[in-house]
Length: 187
Image 1 (spheres, rainbow, N blue to C red):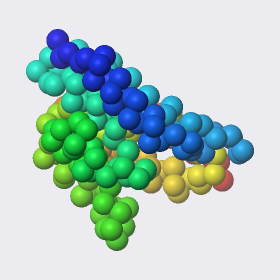
Image 2 (image 1 turned 90 degrees about the vertical axis):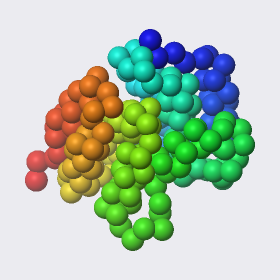
Image 3 (image 1 turned 180 degrees about the vertical axis):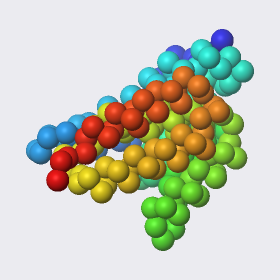
Image 4 (image 1 turned 30 degrees about the horizontal axis):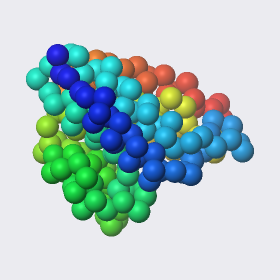
């Protein structure tokens, strides 16, 4: 079985908790904000759930990258700090999972991110699958149909590119993609 250590989990969880402290994201209804750590924990839970099907993978790498996947993109943390604290493999995984916001469009950012993820081991692929699963529970209340459908198409591209890493996560992602259609509003 692909093993992961509660100590490695705690190290990454404490780091993420410190640096994401105070961050929130828009909830399902107007005026509701959710602690960002809810997302981080959801991604880690998906990865941990799927790891038993892949005993060949490094569980600690997958779990730590799941907990840290947005820490460079969304906080003041640098990649050098991640590398110093967690080592090269985790830093390389987090870097692959971090969007390059200097690219001109969301489509270019997604293509670049998927290419960098595919250059990593399947542990990192699993984190991205889990990330999109967690993001597909419900769209923010302020998204219109165009944005909902755009996000759904992005999820389909992620599924197409990364599904070989984890049949379990791929199946969960596909089910979420199908369900996401139900959030489209009648016009």
